[in-house]
Amino acid sequence: MKFNKVRLHGFGYELPPRVVTSAQLEERLSPLYQRLKLPPGRLEMMSGIKERRFWDEGMRPSDGAVLAGRKAIAAAGIDPAELECLFFTGVSRNMMEPATATFVHRQLGLPEKCLVYDISNACLGFLNGMVTLGGMIELGVVANGLIVSGETAEELVESTIADLLDNPTVTRKSIKNSFASLTIGSGAVALVMGGAGHPDHGHRLINATYRAKTSFNDLCQGGQVSASGTLMATDSEELLKRGVETASETWRDFLAESEWSAEAITSFFCHQVGSAHARLLFESLGLDQSRNYETLARLGNVGSVSAPITMALGIEEGRLKAGEKAAVLGIGSGINCLMLGIEW
Image 1: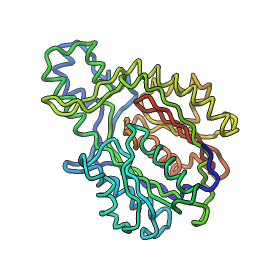
Image 2: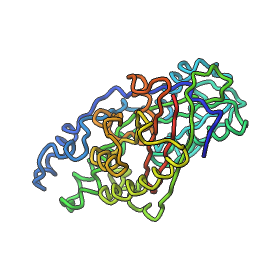
Image 3: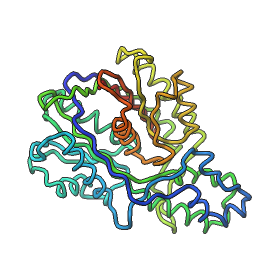
């Protein structure tokens, strides 16, 4: 999918106030670690995640999305009354219905004449939102729109810790299925996109390349309900293998469709999963990992927020300059892969 008219007008993000280290989570799991004879530091060593952010109690997915949305609207310099659509794209949501987007729409005071709904696709939701809105702008269906996401990891992490401590059958082997749940963090991000008619900074969405390998949709499944709460089971090793395999195939299509060389891309912003994942991904794609801007060690895996907040922070820190090209590489459970080309 190629775009000619789509511009990125302004990012916004919100980092939760509480910093929780991997060491702190392991301290809570110390009875289990002692029983299984697991060494402290294992979580950070295997994931590369030193810390992640958590919201204060009572924070809903829409609340974080509203905070990020206000910042994106201000950065874009657009009147909220002019926004024509709003997508909420998180894994987390306020409730089954109505759509979490409706809570964001109400809190931001957006106009009634505004297309409002949720887009959900695990960790790729926000990038899917960019493709959906981009296509609508390209076709002239809307002139602009706002994409938001707010992830709340607290319940999953708490449920996972409680389940591991309460389950006497957990072994060194079976604990691996819960490992990914301890890498999750919270956060919120937003982006205003529009056509070239808005004050144009030249930040262009160029193309989107995608691939689905749904024969592997059993490798990461969340939503199981236990006495401890909601849980997620992940075969991390196989998910890593199949995800990178799918990304390699998508990458070949991306280069052909964008008509870019790998050397022309100055910055990569990826979904932040783990340090081993990043190494294997860049080795498999034959890319220089120094061009990959990372937030993993300080934010963990923030679900659908992960790739876009990494890009927003990278732009803020000067990693993407005028005239440069960037690629956003997203891999989500399913397995789905989506890569976006952006020209700054």
